[in-house]
Amino acid sequence: MLNTSAHQTTPRTILVVEDEPDLATAIAQRITAKGWTARVASDGASAVRAAGQLKPDLVIMDIMLPVMDGIEATKRIVAERPVPVLMLTARDAESDKVMGLGAGADDYMTKPFSPRELIARCEALLRRVERATIIAKNLENEKVLDFGSLVIDPRQRIVTFEGEQVHLTPTEFDLLATLARKPKSVFKREKLLEEVWDWPDASGTRTVDSHVKALRHKLGSAMIRTAHGVGYAFEPPQDDDADER
Image (cartoon, rainbow, N blue to C red):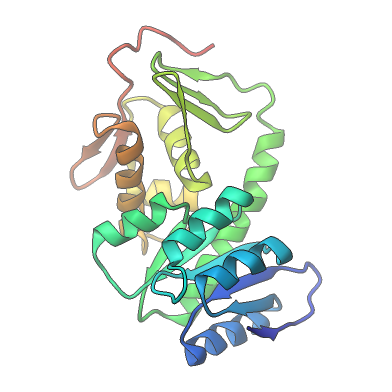
């Protein structure tokens, strides 16, 4: 395991999980140049152990890893402690991305990627964590969104569907809650990127699509309607005779 560190006013620890030494070093150097602290693990099992010990602020996770792949490692890391995960994949197949998001990743990038964009994505994820903390403090009086078979509790960040609690990643929850606060209203992908991902541009519209697919996998395909060429809208379940309480 390679360790590099840097000092900054507000310390941030980033765990980089990558088995290609040159790429791992390059990512770590970018991270330390930003003023964050980088820790590098070269396989999935080491990553799980490192995450438990270091309690990083963010994890950059490659999918193709020895000993334990990135999908399984991500599942174990986020099950132990909520932490944003940016997944790296050499494969551009949508199914691979949805699988990664389903494992608990908040975002993904396909190799090869721009180091500058990687750092920008990390910054956005860290800002979202900070913003979520602030928002949570301001949601003490927000009502539960009750749509009958689907109930969304913004205060506790809990979703239940047909009486069973559904495990959503922080990003999936924010996306669902954003759509559900305005049922049937179409949100442009660019607007969702701005509100949920805190991205000021439209460079990640496919990220929105992949997260929607992950949500549909967990809640059913009818819950989120596609407005072709525009974006998405939340469609309450058919038993939506319940209202907000």
